[in-house]
Image 1 (cartoon, rainbow, N blue to C red):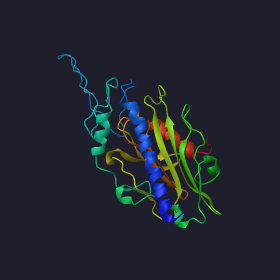
Image 2 (cartoon, rainbow, N blue to C red):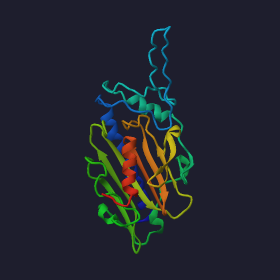
Image 3 (cartoon, rainbow, N blue to C red):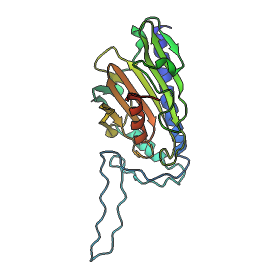
Image 4 (cartoon, one colour):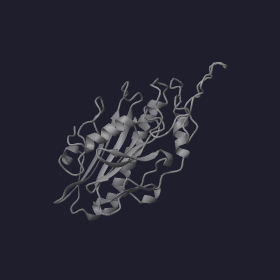
Length: 268
């Protein structure tokens, strides 16, 4: 496979994974199912409520709203198409473009890596078992109980080096109390050959923040409704020479649980 064809294959595969993840979750969210009211995004203060006094009737509490879009953080999920305004509002926000958690993230960060540029005799596989014990290992089953088996799998292995790149998509059905509208993530890992590491992702700037995940810094895009997984969910981290990024739609607690499974000592 030529370098140009490998670059096209990697780029097409990653775009398909991201679009598939977003479509899976969006279809769940616009259908009008009921879910638990979401909490405000981490680090985002909720609007204050009125304080009743003895001399005045009790005031009606002010509904919490997202400070960046003005949308309610307690939506009526029984209404059809209720999630559409949230997705559209997030798309109108400025995109993050800068260095966070040691990684340049944003539209100006350049294209996805092409490991075939320094890979001798590249070989492609469609089984995650090939990554077991490698630097780019991915879970063979979904880390969240009830999750669906991984699919859209691509593994790149180099002669004498073993696997140097892997990607897969992991989907969640509706799981009451955990994923009320399902969810999905495309997960990608690659050994990088340049510093600083960079990845071209289009994330809403107000939702990106640095967190410690599995003992190391990570850039996390918190969805506008974090407990429902509405809005872009993403995590990017660079450790031990491996760049890992995941993007899709998934409740924030499950995203962090997924990351812990990847970077922890044991993997499913």
